[in-house]
Length: 324
Image 1 (spheres, helix red, strand yellow):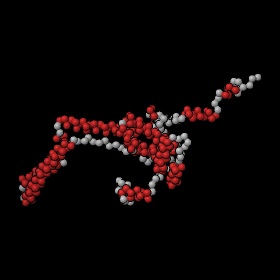
Image 2 (cartoon, one colour):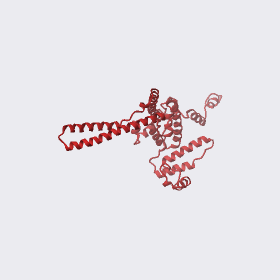
Image 3 (cartoon, rainbow, N blue to C red):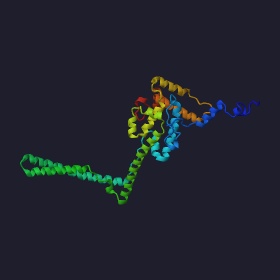
Image 4 (cartoon, helix red, strand yellow):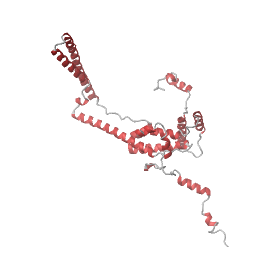
């Protein structure tokens, strides 16, 4: 009887991968692929770029957060313009500059406004003096209907002149036809750009929500600011809430202990064998953000005073808030 061969041993057993080999292939094949329903991003171009919330794994989630945010910023810049992409990078809203008025036109307009104000103010002063005179005459002759009517007439003219003081000539009144056309187009473009930016902000909000896993969404909805953020489709506050939720996963821990733990983890973090410099930088930067979110700081009052004295010859506490 032949042993081995295609039976239980031999070639049949030999073609089956070993235990370690099987795990290695599985790990390689499934790396970065979502494993549960709801973990695919809503955006087809970034299905594997997700904001995630694991259990006590904020360092890894922080790395994922940074990479996902970079991908979203790039995608937003390509599809919705650089203005809203910069808002995500800077964490603050962009204010589109209003159209700049030609200095020569502005000078003519201001001159016309000054003349208008001077003329109308002279009318107001004249009616004021006249009204004072008429009021004195009415007081002396209270039964004189002509004087009473005159008082009403002068008071109305004075009121009308005072209203004219609030109605300056428009800038268009000093423009040529071509200048009016150009000015009108610039203002219309500014309104349209603001409207488009507002629409894109709402789209970016939806995009980021679509890249959040279900556990992360559930956790964010527990935050006191959630409802206001959702009602306003505030993409910047949503990003800040995602970051806070991802990097602050140990709220039940004593806050003093948490700062110590995060600072210790940062100081003990080392570049692992085989880790390139870029990855080491990103992971270190992520650790810094985690420590900051826990309440850690990287300066001391003595060093602040030292730097302040060197740069401004003042103690730090004596500097203005902008300088600080």
